[in-house]
Image (cartoon, rainbow, N blue to C red):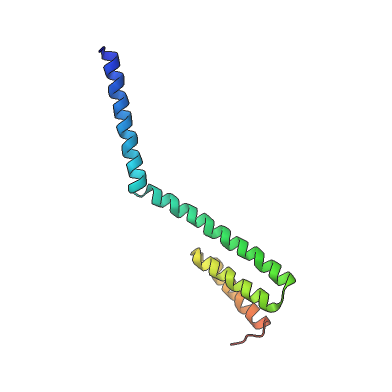
Length: 105
């Protein structure tokens, strides 16, 4: 075998090993976990935004009890998403809706 072919084979083997190590690190070294966490954060934020939209539909078209229940779901969605600022905001809205629904306990 010529030196060029040996060099090419060696370079191919080195690149394959580097790709294998990078793949193993990604799946077992935390890269995949980080990606999953990012995607879960996006999903949780989308769920909370969808719950907000549902609240406004309930508030505009349903009873005071409907609005209260939906506001409770929005605050729970922000709690699940670990979004403290929006959780506090929606907890306040939930309490206002509770009063409007006549549930002053």
